[in-house]
Image (cartoon, rainbow, N blue to C red; front, side, top):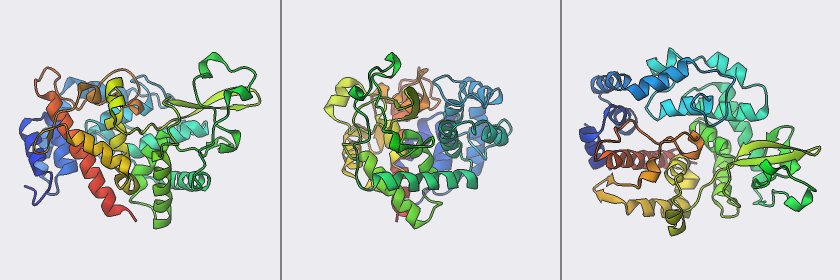
Length: 352
């Protein structure tokens, strides 16, 4: 058993009530002292679940050229959806199906494909110097443009005589922020890719990352809630990235039934600058009010949504619990909050 873990009550609750996916992740991610024989039993049990077999089959048949999109056959969904079940690089069932060489080769076509794929590969547990160096360089590029607090980065639609219908509701990034295919504006993929390297880089790079996080959490960043950012070059519009929407959880969002708050909170909890922010503390304060017992939470079902949209929307939040189980929301809510709290604890220990 663990000694002195401040989340012990929640962990005990999950080990007693959760299915094999969450038990496996609790033993591997939340417990200070491992129980390998019990984790192996959970692993074998989770592999027998139909939903796990379905997601592993998606990895087996993955076309690595298909990187972005909402479909369950896209790399940016296949890998992290397995990660939600604890299956990632270093786990046998994942490794025997995953072809990292093919993944690297497929994502070299465009800077956008490389940004998305490298972030997802890091999130999946792959630690390769090419990935770490790429996001360390991204941190430098982005920090050079954002450190002075410039949020005037989008063009006015009136600048253009006509905008194709599919782009009219999307922010148009200034061309000087899009350098030879490399966007200087931080996206959700940057947050996903920077989180795993946070403990691997030097203090200078970590400080850059923290400045980027503070930039993202400034209210001036969230000019709009839309997934795609576009740019215009030579009169042609192109989708170039994905926005990071990090709202404070207010009554307005409660009323709007916004589904992504827990997803973004989990992503940002990996950074010291985020954990120290009023944004994080206010959000955690709101979700703390959803406790129904010591370290046991009950969140709205919209925070645990599972649907056909993309993982980066926070739309694949299932943790393998049967949704027929009367307490599935308590179980999945509790794990999500324990994971966020653990991330925050680690970030504070790693931060400069």
